[in-house]
Length: 472
Image (cartoon, rainbow, N blue to C red):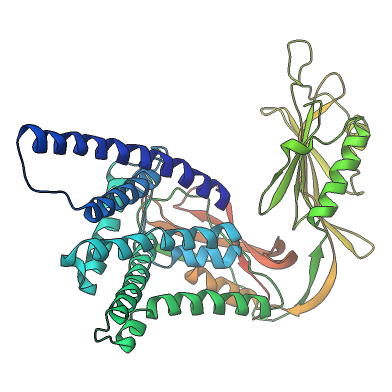
């Protein structure tokens, strides 16, 4: 989910929270009028206290609605017990959305740490506010776990509690200013100490950004097995293979990606070929890609910035007369692709998936001159000669620089350090042969990786685990 989607949902839930709070205030107001007019009550309501209740209840409603109702009921008791899992994932992907989600989880609880001691004297002691914030976050996580409304994440507990600590620090700043105005005794050093969580956050995020910018290559997110997140597991690894201990050098490539302006030119060129134009009102720009649609609503094109991948969809192509076909020849398919501005490198292999009725062209590290082509293109062919669901994931990359690699044996030993996620039972890995493959990193480079064939839990299915190969 993109960060702007999260913020958009936050805006929606804020409006709902305000509405529900106004409703509660109206009910309270009616009750108060009954108390004053009919019951002849003489106790007056504190308008500042009422304002605090209004804001605090509205905030609580927004947090609860946003965290519990923004997800479907599809996580079957999933738990992520590593408090730094979100940070590891954000670091490996170097995704603005991933880091943004961490920041959102911190900022979301800043008002709690600020508002609670501001309106309730019982919580003006720091540890009481910290504990209350932690318990509030824990309650939300437990509700998510038991009602399958999300994933129980200790990382969320950590980030939420940090937000509470930062919010309390802001409260202490307000107290310091108010005391100064009243010419009361103040402790500036104590106030500064309560800003330590904020300073640590700024230093942590800033330091991470600097370290990432200083490293030459990007990070490679590796997910060993496509498994469902469940409970923590034990992993047993064994192999009958002998792996080479010799270190070698391999080329790192730079992928041909696009800037936003270049992506727009690609879209303009594509729509010109199809005798139509971009619908400027329907452009959607995301962190990783941009989506364009034509004014006739016949095509859309997804252009990915870092790796240059392109997806093309032909809209409203399916009808009773125009059916999918798996009888097209290679020549027919290449001719159809050329109409979309797609030209395949020599040496690709063609396979047909009869079940899905799709065609797949695969380039297995094809070199033409110095340029490397690696990946596959999938598409659906229709009887009228049009294509749909074009997924051009053939990487085009040029030599960047040779780097020393760790040995096969070192890579095998790193399997023990891998995060195998969560599964409903312990895993036994039978590790087989290894070869060098390539995987894109977070800075747009195409790095060598060791690809291990594995069988897990004594099954016949062979999966693959990738270990980054470049020596650090």
